[in-house]
Length: 478
Image 1 (cartoon, rainbow, N blue to C red):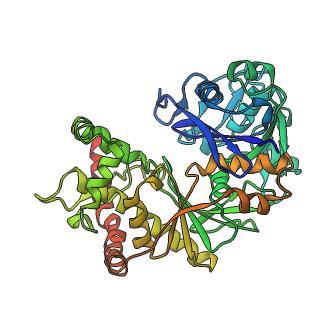
Image 2: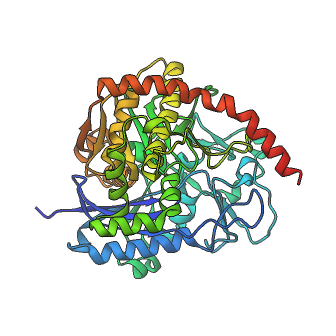
Image 3: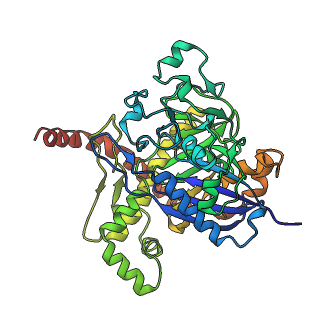
């Protein structure tokens, strides 16, 4: 029987990735295209420059198809997920009327304000990209958390006119809604010519990138958690109902109809901090790694493996990007002495990420009345054995690394597999396409040490916030 293939598109905040899978979820080939740095022309304005989200997709898809060893006629579908909590303003012809507003843009904290007659439609990144790839003005209902007239219980626009109108968008400016796992359109001639992906292939809606990642990581019940190690780090479990006003997590749409993802508080610019450190001491790390004949990340991980748990007392507080409600917060290292170098800093960043996420997950577990018995890590950090073991020791549960680290891309392919009839439902598709690769078990001694250090870590901000706020006030008045 001829092998069939699925394409998973994962549009993230730092790059766009295109992965071609077989129907068992095994990677055949993949390509990625880095996004340009965010454009920040004014305070509070954070935009994706030019048409970066689409042009990066074209480039990544074209390279993936060049690497594809099979017959393009055997590709049966495309799954699409994109970064969440963004706003795209679109002309009548489907092109951008203005740069896409990032999730970090303060305009996303309030309803849409119509300022230009060039804007015919207001949509998310998934709606915009679906329109460019297929010409169909459809979008997934599962990417409308935030300032949108979306009834999260029905997965449809509000019926009540007063509630709907409070969001500042007319019905004519919104795309037609589809469910995850439904076809949104078919590859058009322009995208086919630019990429080599066959014209007429069904393009399937998923949700947002985090929800697709949860699906691709294999989350099927509340006893398995996921920590997504990306630019924004979040922890997730899945559940059947929408919680309206939780205190320590929020409810997101899942990449499966009428299911939800419960997501803890997270870390803004989380794994970005690793890139920041690598670039800060870039020349020395680059040269040392080259001398060893290994990559920079591998070199840093080798060094960090030789640093004792607790980084000889160095702790890192991950507030490199403060929230709008607490703009005075700053990232910091605390506890330097003469023993410490950049290897200690790197390990303390990983430990700080694990400490912070353990706090957030514990708060979410207490409110849900459940407990995570196994943790999956996805994203670039999951490639690090040091990071995996730190999480196992801090959380004191088995931590799993799946065969497919790009869980969002696999989640997209799972949605495509269901829509194209490869599998009858999401349970069957997940069971066949998601596979564990490695399991890291907690060490009792390190788990005990990290539990004690975690209590110290939890108190740092309470001691330093007042100092940071005073400093911010002094500097803002100059």
